[in-house]
Image 1 (cartoon, rainbow, N blue to C red):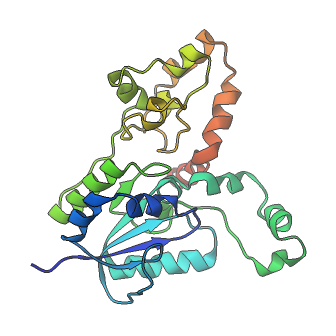
Image 2: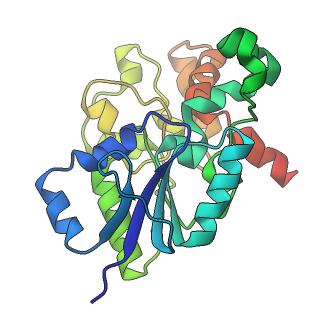
Length: 251
């Protein structure tokens, strides 16, 4: 049986989500028996310019060159996967969208700023159609494997659309709010098995917001623990600034 040709690509990102794949360990060998990885800059030097069965894309789109390139990848790939927070929701790069772009260029590049064109940060789905998404910063490898299995079987994969709090309670964690810490679990999509909270950290919202967040419940939590609503909104900006582009498209 012919193995599907799969390639990894990166745009504006830290490449940490691709590193997650490289660090899978022994289970990676089983995966490689079923696929043909033809391009993956982080682990191999070979390049592939032919058609692809699956393109796995990390990073967000931040300039015209990136937009042209992702369109070319989309044309070559039968299936395109947005991989990691930068790709699925714009990620940390989206913070740029709350500033004047000319000011940002001057701040970063100083006298040479005109040599570096830029644009508002976009998630991959805001530039080209996406078939599958793997959320998280970095991605949760068990979820990535589930998505990959779904692709190989030709099945859909539904990203969970309920709050991280659900998984957190199932894992019997003490609520971060009870510890006196503000957490984005009540409004963030699950699917990570409350990974960060399990390890003593808060939820930063890296998986994006649930489609219908319980805003009233979240407000009640904030009132109960006397936390300013602005503080929660500021925390959301770390990963979720590109959601405004989706809102604009809908209006």
